[in-house]
Length: 214
Image 1 (cartoon, rainbow, N blue to C red):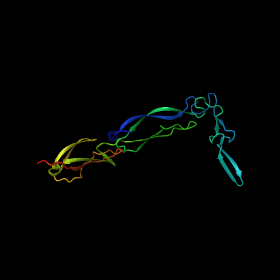
Image 2 (cartoon, rainbow, N blue to C red):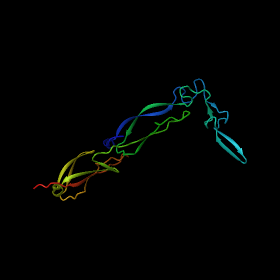
Image 3 (cartoon, helix red, strand yellow):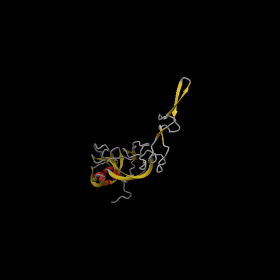
Image 4 (cartoon, rainbow, N blue to C red):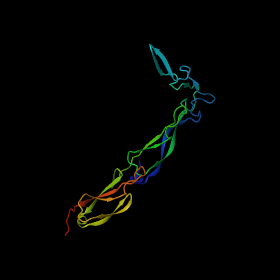
């Protein structure tokens, strides 16, 4: 979970995850020191057992080795023959600018290690962006709604607004209708691909006074 401002500028964070890794004692083989994996005597290393049923040959996974073709007669005491142990790891995640809520990042090789010294998988990180109190996002565009006094809507004027892109001067033309959009090009969200940037729109609505002065 990151702040809205962090999704605008991009950030870097560290997460801690439990991960299955190769057992350092047996180097991922699952066999105790001084021993090694042996060829399965039941399937002779094929991982399958074949049966003749009439004119058909049926193959099924070997029940003794589980299809691996090898067995561990003397399992490693640390991992109990699995070849993997669970550890907590801290992983640095670089979050690009423009990331949207619900998008996920793929970290190659940061997943769990495969069995029997297999290569590690990937780690997927799903990003959740906290809502901003003023701005909301539509694609790469940002929108904010601001209540403006009626005299400024009728006669024109200006005001300042604080945005993720900095302080913006909002010029209100005379005779503006309530609900009008004032655009600021290239002040919206950067594209997560690194190409281009959206726009920022300020929606002005008339602030109707409850009590009229002279």
